[in-house]
Image (cartoon, rainbow over the protein chains, first blue to last red):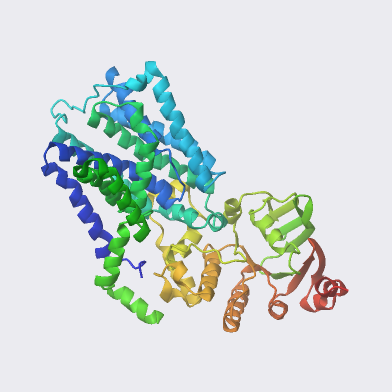
Length: 327
Length: 245
């Protein structure tokens, strides 16, 4: 009975995970940096989870959307544009390119769509490298500052972590709202059965385009936060590996589950760092871990929680009554 | 003016006519049966009317409006709902979610569906219908956990959910056990008596003959007969189509 939702199973994992996101504030420099990366990946992965997990539309273009956000900051900031405006512009550009990349999704599906979107990532990567006057080419853009409001500066690592959390909260909240709205249901219906969804009045065009555009906008926000975190961006940070990483996060955490990207981004960012002690072997061990997770937990790590709940937490009274009458 | 009017509708697949010049009219409150041997174009007719397929020629008029070539979602929003030959539910959503999904796109704006809460009446109607179909106790189950017959009922309930003006049922009784057939026929009759308009494709002759007031017979994409169950049963062309000469 994985479908019955009692309040405890609904919110406990979310609470624990959000608690984990506060943890890095108490850690020293390097660990704090890893925690910051988790936040960036989390925001982008929330976007991909919407596109892929809920609406079922594969996108391998999320690295490109991340780039739009990061380069908006990198290019506009030297002209004196405040960071928040850069972020807004980056998210908007991502949103519209998301719409654009959504159009092929109206015609092609699955692995064909994967090819189209990966092509987009490559085009963006090459453009970033070749438009040297604009993007600095392969040398990238150095010296990106963290936001400074005059009376308060977010320059220190700890302060910038707090700043990113301030952005993560509305992202998480809005994603939660979308998931629970009728849009979330329409997205799921497209994933589950396109034919039936259309026959029940779902505009496949509008919803698919929105699933791409909103997913892309989140990645744009993540990209804008990413640039000042590193202080330096270059095209290699926005290539296919990055896109695959996002895919990994969403799949490992649990596709189409709200908690999925949180778990996924923690695992995908922290696990390789934790394995670094094993030196040259660490990527191999990481890869094996991923394979094992996928083999034994096809529903992602959130599936573990489901198993735990099914075993140890009794269903609420209402559902008990339902079960009885079902017998 | 008829509620639904199909005028010389045709559909060609690679030059082969799956549907050839079919015309029909459905009045409000009617229960029209469509029969015919396999491959006679019944489902193609439904697909062309409901916007799943683009017709190659002819017109579909619904409540006076020409809806020929409209996409499936637009046709649905005009008030024409359908079921499919094979059960089409959303397996990884609960029964209740399936029902709510079936009504949410009929009215309102897209932006409203994001920003505002779903009206309470939708939930009430879903429970009412599920209760009517005797599957309300399953409302928290995933649709994929339901038995075949229960899924068939859910599928039927979803078609009713948005209060459509016409409901197209594509073989609602296929693969359903005898008790469930009685159950389903009872529901269709009952709802028809309450004023719902149905067009039913069905292979179970016994049921069609007792259920429908008027029957249209298709064979090889063409309409070969029309009339009351008795008239159709005695029509030599119909006997030919089914048994060959």
